[in-house]
Length: 433
Image (cartoon, rainbow, N blue to C red; front, side, top):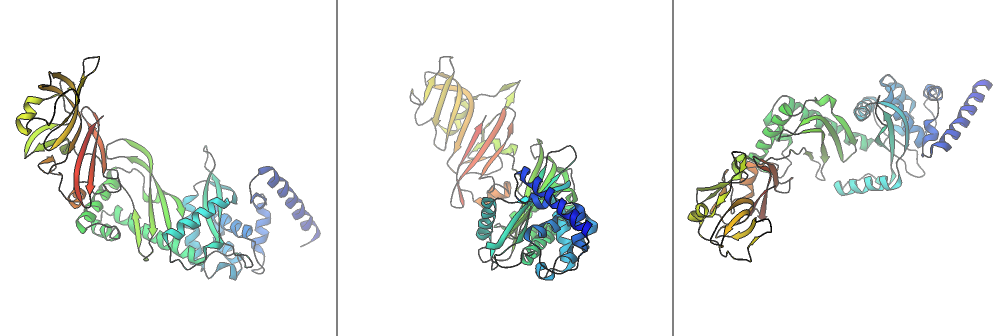
């Protein structure tokens, strides 16, 4: 290097140190280096060893400019590529770019507690992972879109004390395996290929019938409820144990709108993959209708003439009989004249608000209902004593929802909770409001 270039480099390095001291962020010393210095580094022969920060700078540069990927790869010493081919490096960088949607501005070290959390999560997800995760080192790539606040995306390399830092080829290859899975998954959704999708979902702990139903529901959701395309989904994380995507322009099954939703694709300890793409379940209108021995009792949240329909005890008890008790302990009238009833019958219990005449008859809006006998059921046929399999054939994503399904009725929001005993429905709670 001639004298003027050496002087220029020294001045730029001094300026970078000053900028790094003002920023208060680790790693910004490297961030402040000019594009000119980086271009000189890329033009140098493939010899020597890159520091961990210089290695991450190479990754950031490749993400920043697609045209430099080949040059960046060639500028990384062979031993620090850890056996990655140019093709693998190209695929990896282009995949990471899906997580950096704006202009790369800088990078910084990941905090120690953040690195520890990632290592612990991977160790839990992949307990047989032979690679030493102790050397896993994380960095944040900072980027900014026009008119938006700065965001960041995590990238990782391996840096073991006493050894040259490298690209951690095992990490990269697992990320690429997950990226290939994502391609197959989104392709099956785009082609509405329920059979292929069910195969990709087969590692989930469900029967073939439930998997087929989940596949059909997912296809319908992506076709009718997501306005963005797979190529526009933003990568939220790229790790050897999982990758994630944020999808935009969402219309929920209940027709409410959401800015975005997230999905994950994970590696499992047995080497198989798991797709976590959970759809929100919505109460089916039929399940607001309650039956007793096949006879229609009432509909929760029904409205007529702009008023919530009140259930009359005469109509109800002509079918299910009298309550176990109806006295001051279970029926109290408030100062405003509204009676609050908490009654238990042979196969169900209920809460209602309305009027009561001397604890002999009542009329009111049922707000809470608990079905605990198999002679009761909802309109879809679900009732105590039915299997979880039967429940999942009505609500295939119920398990992820904690077996609590929400929705709306004519009178307001409703909720159904399925209480289980093993693999059997023990009781069903319906709530209005």
